[in-house]
Length: 182
Image (cartoon, rainbow, N blue to C red):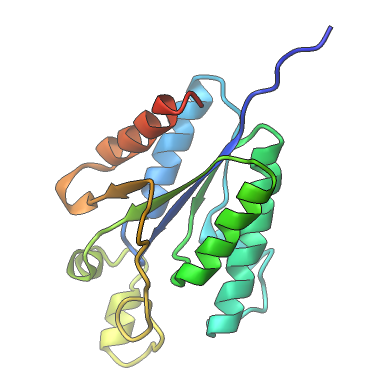
C-alpha cells in the first residue's frame, strides 16, 4: 500500500536587512507545524555560519551563498518539505537561477518580496547593521551602500510597515492555501 506524499514547496522571502523576513518565516513555520506539515526554515544568518562559512559579501560570494541555499531548498521541497527561506538575496539573477532550479525539477517555488522601505528597516535595525553603517564601521550594507534588486514579478509582496508579522505570515499562508499546498 502506498501513501501519497505531501507536496513540498519553497517560499523564498527576499528583502532588505531588518525587513521582517525571519520573523515572518518563523510565524509561518510555526503555524504549518501546528497543522502537521513538514516544514524547514533555512535562515540566511544560520546558513552563513555553517553551510557558507568563509564566504564574504562580494557579489560572487553572495551569489554562491544564494545558490547553496537554493540547492538545499529545492532538495527539501522536492522531497515533500515546505521550505521557508528568509534571506536577503540581493541580486535578481541569483534568485532567478534558484527559480529555474525549482522549475527543472517541477518543484513549486514562490518568491515573496518583503518590501519594507529602507527607512523602516533602519528604524527597526534588529542587528545594529544600519547604526554600524551610519557610524562608518560597516560598508556594503544591502539597500544602503550596496545594491538590492527588488523582484520584478514576485508571487506576493508584503509591505510590513502596514501589517503585523502575523498578518504577513497569514498572507503567505493564504497564498499557499490558494495553490492547494496547505
